[in-house]
Image 1 (cartoon, rainbow, N blue to C red):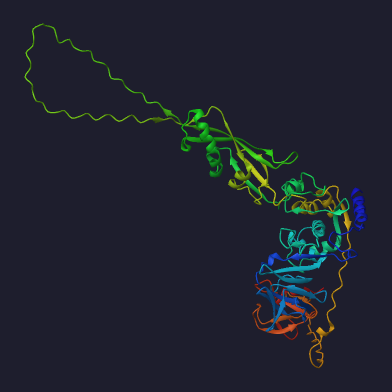
Image 2 (image 1 turned 45 degrees about the horizontal axis):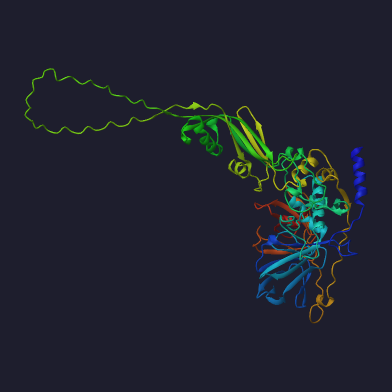
Length: 585
């Protein structure tokens, strides 16, 4: 019953229409975003394949029209753009804008690559190409959602991702800049549209226009791959104000998910089994303590006997934050000492009384005797070293978790020095574990996956957990009408050409299909395009003929390269890419 009430409230809230920042007055039904395509890593050249007809407007006032399937190249020369097409070239001046003429129009930057719908604007910036793609908000999401969160995720998790991505995009719109966002992790990853991502497309459609709001305005809806078991505050990551729909909250769903990244460092209780990395961090403190114990201050003369305790403490921020910065490791240890050498003292001989009589003794006749050799001094005795003797008390060594422990113990995950470190004890060891991939602010994608896939929670439940106190609202995202080109561009010079009828599709008699074969049709191409049937399963192979949309085929088998299939009709047999086919009902 409670879930039903939440759902009804969500639907009512979603009916609320709110203004979009950056949108012009009266244009709330035309939300379009501008994306700087940094992922293309362009320098002075761009190659494009047009899927569907489009127009090209140059900076010096020229306008051209190109049919679907055209291959274009644009290069920068002397800070001007030059357009190349089938041996022809045109100076476009300082800018060039390509606009699709139908709903299927898009640009591919690599053959067989994803589609980039919308309007592509090119200009020269710093001697290099600056490509900005302008497209509808919902189209943009189709290039974001399946890459920020896998298309294989549960539908409700993908819906939550769609709402977050839509909210972030709306909050970033700003007409004072050349673009709203980049296509990288600086904002949101946008990789064009792959029509195979149907699960993500469904999630976008079923949440159309829904965004997260705070006090009537679009929230800055941050999210990360994994928060490690606790959400983070924006103020701990970025400067500036943030909406109040963020709290430090323990997240059991993220921890439950076996796909959440965990790094582990094992500290064996038996000192002889400690890893070299752990021992290296402890020995400087042991050497310093050796003098107090009377031990020899040398690493080879000190031994770690056992690890008796490991703990983490000193959170970086106020409670309940669990981002600990210090680690204590307590050990019992032993050392060696020098044994003092005992020195022997020779006995003193008493003098003999030689004067018993008073009669003088005649002087002896001197005798010459050979010199006696000088005696060699005896070597000093070598100091003795004791066996290992236990220290009087255990030693606790305090280490900095960042950057020392996480990097030297192999606990670093994201490289941002913000991992959540915990310790658990087994019979033979202490195990330090680190979690968190990303900044940890807002929705955890792994947490959302667990909530939707295991706990059956809806996208509104997920968003309410990660953005407490927020509201779900809705903006209108009606698509903008396609541009109308100059009619004169659609005519061929000279006398009107005789219309060429569309070729009749080849007949296919299914009958009894061989084992593993199935009936399919050519669908994933534009109406004015065609699919090559090749002699061999390779893009470089000879073209046998061109097939048009809705052509029926019998798929005989998948080739060694799984992108290609062996197909036939009643009149011909060859190979084509499976991505352009759909299995017949």
